[in-house]
Length: 134
Ligand code: IDP
Ligand code: MG
Image 1 (cartoon, protein in one colour):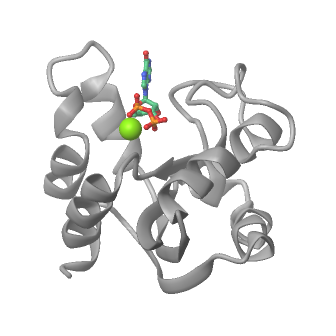
Image 2 (cartoon, protein in one colour):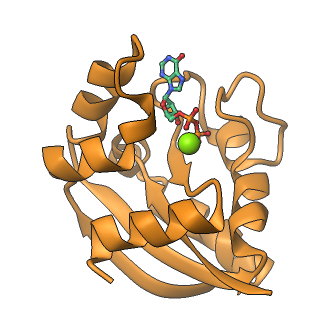
């Protein structure tokens, strides 16, 4: 089933100059770039994107972090794109993420874990609306 997913390269990875190698992994897998934009995340967008985590101890820091500098926002498409991208990204904590995954290869800490990706088709539709207004 062809699917769309929302992927966001987080501020630490953009600052470290990792955009090209990260995008290359999705393209190498055959995923299609539908939208791609460098920009900042507003507080409203951050709170909407992470609404499920409101009230958790890391929520305030997470919103502050994701709004702290430029990110790369993308819509990628392909067969089972949501699941395929989550596999390419690896586990949430880079220290648990397998070598060969984006977080496993480029990340070291849970709060600055390189990349965001939608966790379901429903989340993807919601997140694409938040960041691209579609
Ligand atoms: P995901 O990004 O793999 O979907 P979520 O559980 O949805 O993981 O968490 C969203 C983001 O919040 C993570 O990518 C990570 O940056 C941050 N995060 C999650 N759990 C913690 C934590 O326990 N401490 C600090 N940051 C966390
Ligand atoms: Mg999540």
